[in-house]
Image (cartoon, rainbow, N blue to C red; front, side, top):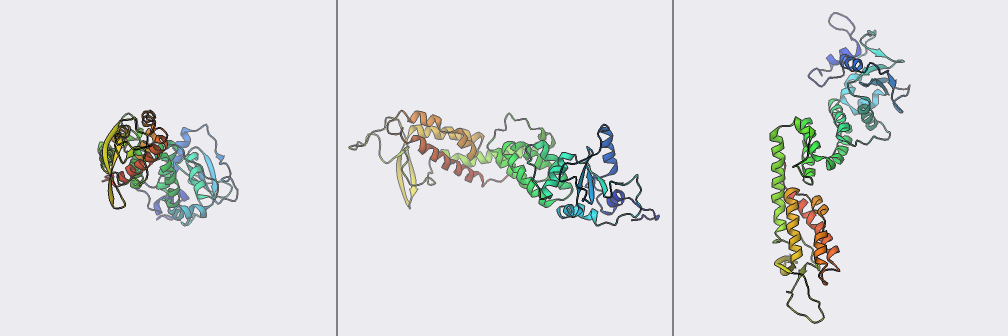
Length: 357
């Protein structure tokens, strides 16, 4: 392709101009890689590991740490409109060697991404075993590159791994997703954060978000805690399945019945349960009420079903085991109850939306 003076423009140069990507999206420039190469002058250009070292490739992507990935244009073009534009532009008939590199025939395209990032992205594009992304340090450059090159199908794969990481370090993913404008992942990470304390966690990515964004997260958590709070009151147990529960009785301790052993543990408050269009009254055990109080302390800080389950039932089982009536069934009943309670907590907080401007 020639400029207005009739001079041939080399591959990277005319591509940048013709694709209209000068506004920040285009970072695959010769100078950027030259700078990186200067910083790593001791490195030598080397080929990537299989399958990105085949001579049948028709283009080479050279990473910032000087690793050559031999790939096929057709595969990249399918995965990325960015590369599709690149490969459909006319090639110069006589490229200047100082502007364009060729290696055994295929053109070499300098990239700003390092070899680790390119390897992950290309393995998603190719029908080969993918690399699992295990940490934020690996995830971030991959996300930035996928966004830069507009690789929608690759993004879906990366997002699925991003959500796995969010379950472990939700606050870091919350901040990273905000920085990159991934609102769906912002909300997902905020939801994951409900199972974690935010009081003593250091989050490097928080340096990149505003105080307002952090305050919105705290407000979301407070509203989720408020949504879960009524469950701990015990006033509405309509969600509890209609079955025999060791912590619910239809009569008081002093209502003696022949052949029925009496509870030796303390009695708690009365509750009502709606079952089959009928509201029935039940007498409860005090150790059960104590456990509800401990659950509320958990959901005040971490309003999440996961946090409720992780808190366990050990203390309730220990106390109830001193009662010969409660002891045989308290373990299985309380584990079943906590699983149901956790599901109700998640149901309640699912109605709360994180505010994103």
